[in-house]
Length: 89
Image 1 (spheres, helix red, strand yellow):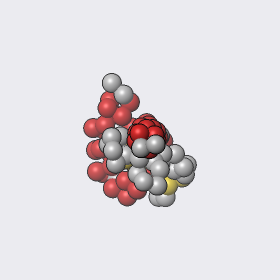
Image 2 (cartoon, rainbow, N blue to C red; image 1 turned 120 degrees about the horizontal axis):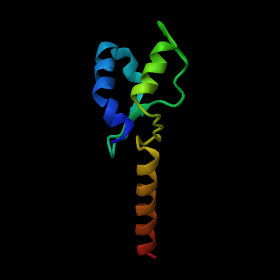
Image 3 (cartoon, rainbow, N blue to C red; image 1 turned 120 degrees about the vertical axis):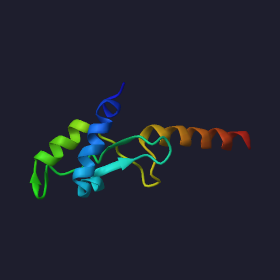
């Protein structure tokens, strides 16, 4: 069980209480993985440091590419695209 699965319900409840923090949560468009934006500032007003600390406790860091894919999915999609290009040569 991953950290996000263990804390998923608690994290969801926290975001329901403080919906403005949702903007700091990323979700992969392919696999649905969720995590906090790695560049989230330490101080999110009006909750200095506490909000960031709690987000990091409930969610893992998750960077997403411009296309909305996490690193793992981007590699898989990139590999499949490369493989299909080689098939046409």
